[in-house]
Image (tube, rainbow, N blue to C red; front, side, top):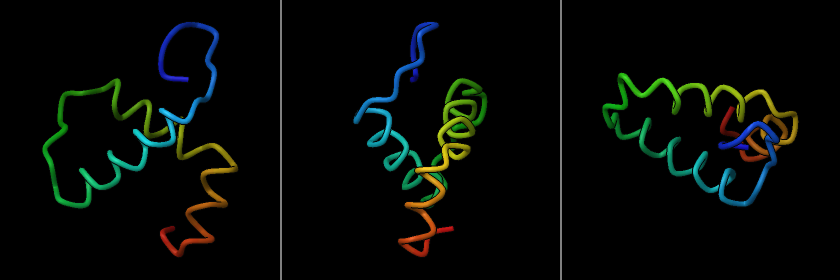
Length: 59
């Protein structure tokens, strides 16, 4: 999902999303990293991610 034109979701994408959510929670400065913001947006739009966040009370 995160590289190449043939976007393919892998477990690495799920883990990176989790770690980046932690980074945002502790206010790690990720300004200027547009590719990170775009990745987070794409992940947040996935229905499975929305379902998981809701199920865990994180949304």
